Length: 482
Image (cartoon, rainbow, N blue to C red):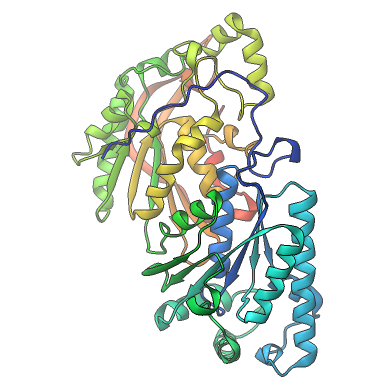
């Protein structure tokens, strides 16, 4: 399959483009006339928080300012300590009062975010299992002019529920210092209490509501009354994600002829050392014996040549092409500074929004990579051979980077990043596979492209694998030099 997405070539306006991710109010692109609340619905251990965080990460990446409001966090702040499942009994009047107050406090923060801080979407992460609670949220939204979209997660697969409890819940803040078996028993009893009062979304009573019902982690979907562009994108995204074990490998092409001269862009083939890397990469991939690995490249010579030694079919995506540098293609950074000093300065001021004359910005690259992200979410094991700017944009999605951080992630040549999403959790396990080359800089050459390889060692070193929590933004992509 080959993507037919073209590069956007809008008029130049280096600093006038809208900001992305968590951006200032004045610069946020409004994709909907009214702010929206995404309301999660479902019993505990149904993946609601996982869905909330993943959806928020996606919406921020595409430029819709989004924030999660987890009512459980408000509840833990309001109570000194968690004692047992009995707190969630519907006959516990004091606890019910606290829980309602926490929900109302969270909604007040939603109002502040959507009405005063420039937010476009608030994700209300709670069980919201009763019709009474959902009506309270609807009334709040109507009073403030917000749209509401419900996301209900329904699961009766005992293995999936047990895995979720084991991987996430028993190690959560409610059970710190608690024996795992005791925590598991308590949480199962908590679920049973919620089941007593659970009122799922049903067609005859909720036909006027906008919602998607996700059944057994994506085996089935029921969608009702999608009202706008943002809701449509949410539905499409949620229908593409899955929790099956898999790994995504990201790497740049081998060193190109233009890389050896410190020139950016172009469509040159691989240098001698780039060809050596291609052979080493093929050896490494073959040794891994990766099940049903798919290989994607851009439509540029250097990625295609890097993939050819793999000896497997590969798909060429135009959407994976390197950022278009326009009039600066095939120039060194020194030459750009000399020939276009104003452009060079503008790029330093706002690297994400800066658009090369007759070329692209990082913001444009994010736009054209959205179908790639959707397809990556659908797939299992994939090796993506692409380019520095493209990898930066892809990593920004997976690592929850802001627009200010995105263009400065270090993605050196001859390094493979292995991303392993963790089911149910909000973590991403990453391994860095660094191919051992001795690199020196050519005198008078600047930038990453000026690297020259003198010696090639076909062996690989596996850097220690560690887990990166998205909210900490602590990731190993900072390996390398620039």
